[in-house]
Amino acid sequence: RYIYAATARTRGPNFGPNVGVLKVDASQPEGQVAHDAWVPECKSQFGGEPIFVPKVGAQKEDDGYLLVLMYDAKSHKSYLAILDASNLQQGPVTKLRMPHHLTAGLHGSWSPA
Image 1 (cartoon, one colour):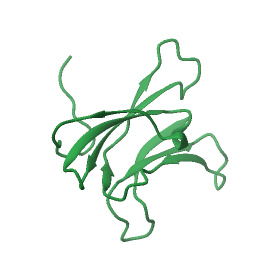
Image 2 (spheres, one colour):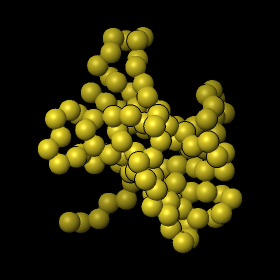
Image 3 (cartoon, rainbow, N blue to C red):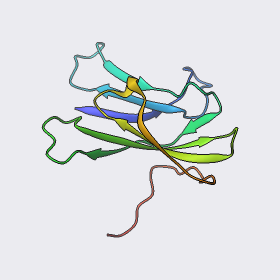
Image 4 (tube, one colour):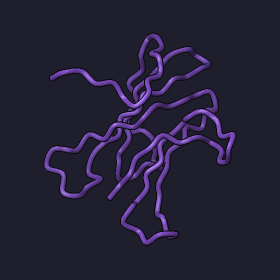
């Protein structure tokens, strides 16, 4: 039902780098797309692809968290933003700050279990 994607600040053919997260409710009739979004206020921050992690005992499809690796160009450091998937507009539940930066990835990173 829900689609989570990285999003830019602007629309159109020359939109900028990904900075935040967009949530789209695909169960809505065509042309009536409901969405929720989070974009950091600081324009020096850029985001990666959101990863959904369900809560233990989740009852609804969006009962969980979105993990988003963020890069802050001002400080040249990264942090992991953890967002409540049912309410992106409230912003991160917490931020796990790193003492350095991590390179941006494309379409996630996977390793064997």
